[in-house]
Length: 449
Image (cartoon, rainbow, N blue to C red; front, side, top):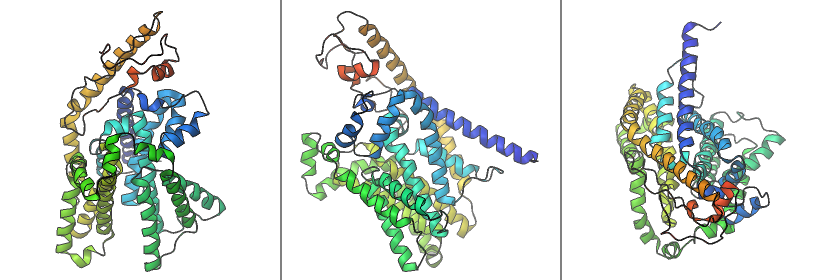
């Protein structure tokens, strides 16, 4: 028999989780389908391999092709669940357990992760609510953070996952999927596997029997992704990309500094502040700090976050959303820092971080929401025009993309929706399953909203 206090805690956790899922579902619903989701004929199963090899070598490209078979409704079901899974993955990485739903003591940490993983990540409109963005960033981010959580758990409990033939085979295929993550995340996963192996060898820690199979799978997936024609195609899309790829590394690094500033601004410059805080903590209690696991994880998380963002100087033409995985490690670093302060200075910062972030979100939520409502209204208007156009005998006119979207409260929280689907017969015919009378491609100066 549950006590009233425990029952109330369960109900509160359930209500909070339900509200969070509804929030993600609602903004996902407002964000329209775009051209990227329709890069191949969605009703032709033969296109799977073609799109996977020639358009996007990431595993997210294959997830996109599978989910688009249900158009947006299947995505509307899975996307909120993926976001919730991300929150739990980061929580597990930091605390090595799931939240205690019988009490409210874990509520500040959960609330901080839930809000930060939406409002403090790079371009949430393109990494969470956009169909093609979510399958390449949010869903792959869940895999990345879950991998890190399992890796840290097995460091403490090598037999956490039983080792048998099934787990070894599953680990190999899971490794392939992890190795075909994003262009910055996949190499980092490989490096973390190598670091785990080296640390276990030096400290004489037991390595699970399934881990070498996982490591081999990651290497295989990494080789598949970077040797794919799609990877070469995406990195040579235009003459600007080709020209920058031929520049010296120093020039590319200088060109990338503006992108690094945008990345750090998206998390309110938490990364440089945490790096400074780590230095100050080490200066205060160096011998204790280097023996504290929370401090070591703070340093590792900051390093991983910086490298995941900075590595794109090798290929400087990248959208801001590419630093999404780096922002996830910044969120984890904040909580590791709070854990270290709690261990060494007996002061719990987590409730204050959660309260400050909740106040920030309450202040910006209205200007944050306005662009999504505007985009949704404009997409409905465009859809009505196209449907009317398709009923005319000579349906040669085509409607242009949506452009007039209000700015958000910050540059990072502004919607960057430049969909070209409205100007191309091919994608319109796919989306509406109708044929145009004329096969010509209209120019940019034709009818616009």
